[in-house]
Image (cartoon, rainbow, N blue to C red; front, side, top):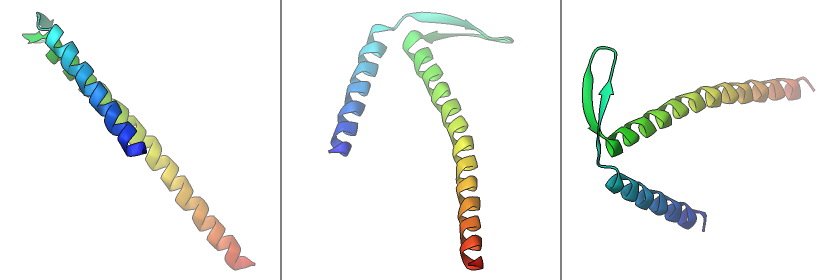
Length: 85
């Protein structure tokens, strides 16, 4: 049941992305520090969303690694204390 709900949510998100992308076809001029380019609005939104997802994943991986190291350390402590008894 959980897999079906996840799949339906993914389909709804993809449909929304297609609708938003088809509605935003205007060209925008992007000025960088050293360059300038023209992108479609939908492409720019996809790029910024992708960058946000990547930054969020990097942040979450860092905190996940920290927590997994804490769990491993605490498990080792429990094993060591149980051997002492």
